Image (cartoon, rainbow, N blue to C red; front, side, top):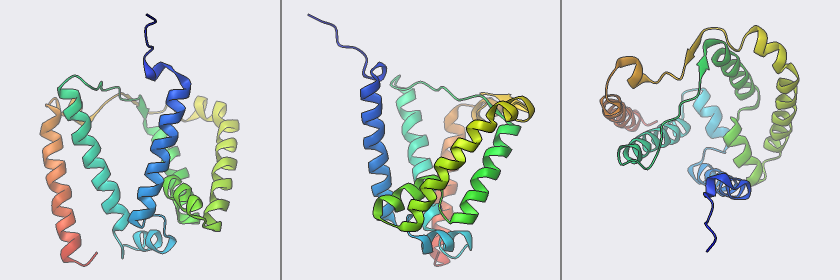
Length: 186
């Protein structure tokens, strides 16, 4: 009997799962209201916290879920190497694009899938921007991206504590923030 390969080693499987997860993510963003331009602008003006609520809920769910899987041996922590240079460049590019367009990469894809013409133009901008970044990458890689390298550091590693010592207060803080948003009508 032929042995079945690990699905993570089969490119078609990875692409199919990635596409399915992406479509589900876009659908959930759209259903949550995060692909609505007025909601995103409200977020930037601090008058509508819908996007923050969605992202914080996703962050806490992912953090708790991953570390629960990790605790039982079903997931492996593989943080990527990081640097201040790459973080600053990425943050500036993200911020400028978000500020000019009013969408982040996930919400622009969801809005384009929903039929928003401004988002379709934004998708074209993402492709052009990615091409320009790829063209400039060799120069950026030598000049900026490795400045201030901090390796694969995580907050629990930095503090030398069990991950749950970070996860529990962060989750409780997010819940408190949600309660404050609710009481403030945000």
